[in-house]
Image (cartoon, rainbow, N blue to C red; front, side, top):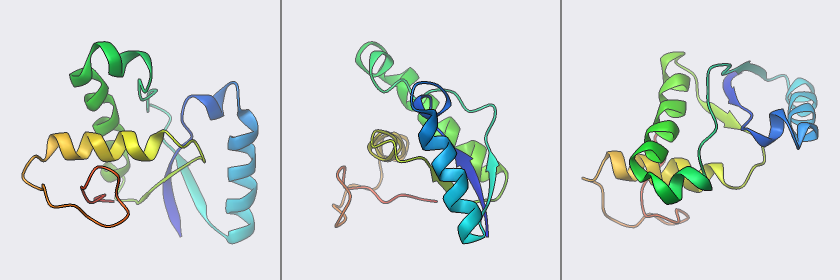
Length: 111
C-alpha cells in the first residue's frame, strides 16, 4: 500500500529518529511512502498565534498535496499534526458542526 508521507518539521531536523523509525517500520510492513517534499511546517506554535488564516492555509495545503497524488496521508508520530490538520479542515468546511466520537474538534478527517 502506498501513502503520501508528511514527516513534519521536527522529524526532518531535531527529531530525525522519528523519520528514520517511520521508514523502517513502513518497510517492515510493506508500505511505500511518497514523501511530500514541498510540504512546509504547519506553523503550530508561532504562526497559529499570530496569523490563524496562514496557519490553516499551511495545514490544508499539506492535505491537498496528499490528495493531489491520490493517496492517503501518513504522518510521523508528532502529536501536533492531527489536531492541527483536523482544525484546519473544520475551519475550511464550516458546514459540519456535529461532534464526532474520537475527534477533538468535532469534525471528521477527510483522508
